Length: 57
Image (tube, rainbow, N blue to C red):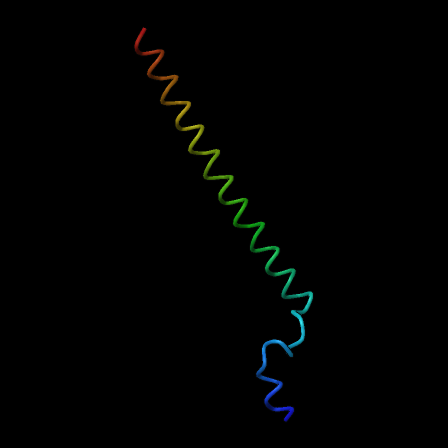
C-alpha cells in the first residue's frame, strides 16, 4: 500500500527549500535578462531617433 502512495502526487512531500531557491534564482535571472534586453532596445531606439532628428535639421 505504501508503494502506491509514493507515486501519488498528492501524498508527495513539498519541494525542498533548495529547489525553491533554485526556482527563485532562475526567475530572477529571467527578469534580469528581460530587463537588460529592454534597456538595450530602448537605448538603440533613442539613438536612432536622435540621429534622425539631428540629421534631418
